[in-house]
Length: 159
Image (tube, rainbow, N blue to C red; front, side, top):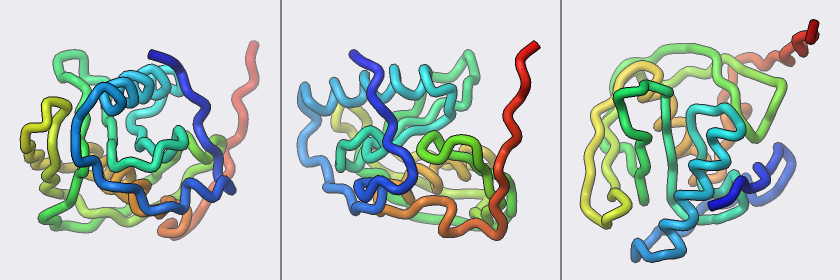
């Protein structure tokens, strides 16, 4: 387990379409462990494998609910979506910025878990937005390309 460097906007790997995972093996499990360490170090709510330079279809989402396990989906695919809502998004690969992005308010996501078993998630609100954002990463799409407007965040002064 290790904290990996998060690729930043401008790195061409972030615009790559990721490869499907055919077998959940030790390499994939190590990748997931590294993604968890990296996500928590970066204080984000989601991370996709290409953000740490691994072009595989693996995402991790943790909205910070103590009673819920982090969501890990391999080969995630949105199979249904409804609604449309504009809200602010940021990204660990574009620190110091956020943008207003339209996303579905409800999504159904299918894929497999770390045991290689099929999983389905019905998500709404922030979780639906996080799924859309992370799955976009797997297709080389960054939220900035979908943003209606972008903002640079002011740095908070330390006292």
